[in-house]
Image (spheres, rainbow, N blue to C red):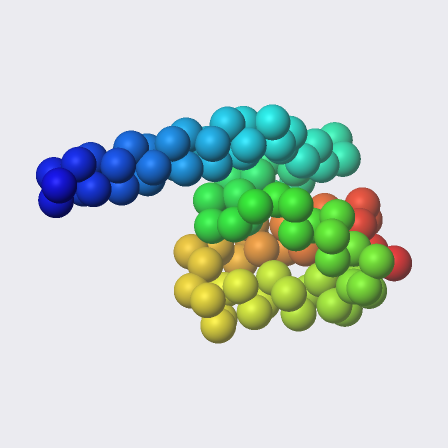
Length: 99
């Protein structure tokens, strides 16, 4: 009886995992605006988190807010972004997603 219960739990776990994978497969990746700096945003920001955060936060962030956000990612979260790339990223975000 114990083996049958264990087998049922394993099968249920596998089925749950497969359903979760197929649900996520329908999700489309966000397409950010094509503009200078996009490659830096995708390469640096997208390496740590979903790029969905860019358009999701854009209604709330002024140019100064985007500067602060990039600085926070580097100083508080340890994003390995050099200063030249940080400026390009901030300029891209301010130009394309600033309020």
